[in-house]
Image (tube, rainbow, N blue to C red):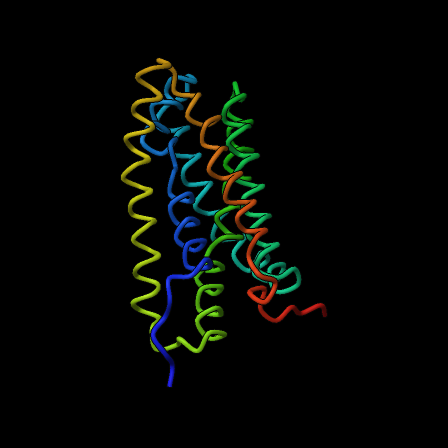
Length: 197
């Protein structure tokens, strides 16, 4: 019989991951940022469509890579891709560079999708807390929602103070860098079974 879970250090790390991941400071201002770059609504729609298509297309190959590298390394790759995309957006001055930024963002999304949830469930199994999945995941997920709420306020303050939209991309790298290092602190046991062939 699985026991009741404890809010231990790993629980705090899972919660911090969700909070930091949802500090998407750029999200409320992405369309305004792209308009400021001189893009038409058609070009903006093309970028959004490209990002969604690329994320879906990359799901399978990134899943294979995740099986070969392990979950922690996969998540690190995800955050590296996000950070590169934010830096490209910050410095980009044309449609094709913005398309490249969307490519890196799509890689980040594809590498991250479902991987962290699998790590949480692996941890619950290791601890004998399998029957606590809903409660445990719900509590850690609540921190993601808090991150979303705080993100909008921080982003609005940044844009108000700086008077610029591009700055949110630069500042968005900070929580993702923190999450990258947080991921490196996860125990190796959460990598899951690694398939090398």
